[in-house]
Picture 1 (cartoon, rainbow, N blue to C red):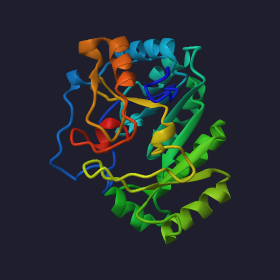
Picture 2: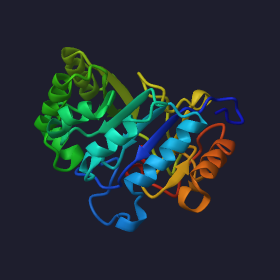
Picture 3: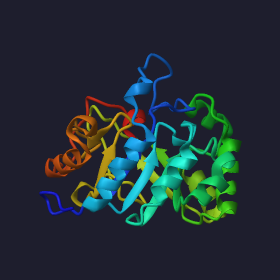
Length: 266
């Protein structure tokens, strides 16, 4: 699927929930935020329908996100359903890793091919503070469990303030090197102000070569994270929503005043 800027759109990020078991400082407020009602969230069957249509249109890779995807009940069966689609080359996930050790083997058996894990520091106290209560040891156990389960393509997403030479970032890189996994550095973003940059070690933020769409937990196809554009699959139908999103995908991101990282999928 080529958009109006001749970019091949073949990647769909799917937020299965806006819920999360952490409250990271740069992602979710500690309190006072409004979560989606149960009936607003797409059922797994609705998501599968969107995926099947998206694959027919040219999508070859999906990434499962949240919120935190592992907090949604039935996530393993959902991964199994998606993995049955022979048109997909990859089924991947981004997780904060807190629950990963409990799900690692089942995720691999269900068909997950790659995984990204969020980790901004290997200092347990700093991790607790950044995540407002997270246990670093659970994330490390999750990384070790998913390696043991057989996934070798593991990336760690580390949010940085200014530079990947910051002490915490350097420590994360050293940790990743010791585990034989890749560290990626994501400059802290601001949706409302339109602050973003290209991910170090990844392709996110590279507008000129962007190949992705996003499906929010409540069924909106978003052509760009840094845009208020969205197309409702329930109102328009999945095919029309996807085609409209590709047709109106902007040349580059600007700003987003209608969503947050936790309910779009980052």
